[in-house]
Image (cartoon, rainbow, N blue to C red; front, side, top):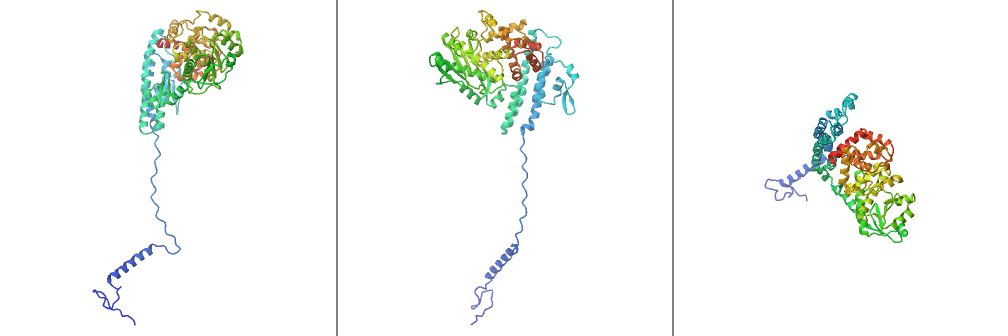
Length: 522
């Protein structure tokens, strides 16, 4: 039987009506239908892809990092140049034109558009660059005291005063770069900070702020080394006893003690503790000398370890000569020591029996060994001998060793008692002797030193060679280091032209500058 629906009323279905036809149920059904239709409207038709979403807004491009060193270094350079420029003006007022030109070059390195410095250098603007103007160059004096030089002592006094001004100006100019380095370091620009600190050191090699920031230490009061270099050099100075065979063991009839560092081995019957002390001084001189000539202090310049055989008695010395020295045995027997080859040296027992004398002799010879390999300088070279004394005196404060080339007549003359050795041992005595000689103008002329055979010149030439190199190293270390490779193997008159071209001055003018430097320094 078919059921019969009863009409709906607000009060609900009739007693016989449909229970799902209430208003609440209808409202639910209608709401669900509306939502279904809305969803269907958003759904793509069968076989049709969903339309792509609108593209997102691209992010703003990241600006390139700012190179603060490049952005500000020009301003810092100009500020540093402005601090150095007064020293140039002061030099010109004092008639120190050679000094003014040297510092003007440094000003131009800091500020390439500095018109005053360019004028001092005799340069004029030519379109997009600077070039020398012959007319200006001809008018500009290029030597100190071009008209009439004052007396040596007066001139030395004037230069001493200006050198103090220069030191203050360089310190201020370097300080500008060091302060810029600090600014970059605070902004974590480590590479730029390092560059700024190195610019400071290029102006003032002793700029404490820049040296400290770069991790340098003043090693033994002699040279600036990084912490890593200090560790390496200190380690090298600590010799180790080694148990190795030596040709001298059989020749001397006993096994010698041997101590070794990275660059030297010392062999002797002497107590190893004494040999260890010698080795420390050898490595100290090695590191200082390499720094002075512009090399890495821990570099290995030798192809083989250098053996130093310290003979304890005349028998051992004669054995060394007889068995290991291949040339002119009787002449070499009279010397205080000699090489058997490039990497083996024998030392005669010193007449005073002093370990100080032994140490000095070994240090002196070690510097000669470095000169030969690293610089191409060997006897009879005034540069070789001058450098040997320069480093020996810097490291020890004294020297007792005198080198004589194998010239029998000169050796016989100079080796006589009282021939010049006595009294010239301590550095203060060397300086006093040189000062007296410079003031009297009776020193060995530089032209003679450069052009004449060195062994024939006597001990006065040794003092001049040492002091001239001391002058160049102190007055302009960079120029001094640049000169040395140019003099490789030079032992004739061609050296005069090389030195004059390098410094842009005659040898006689260099001599005058040296004399004034001696009087204001020694």
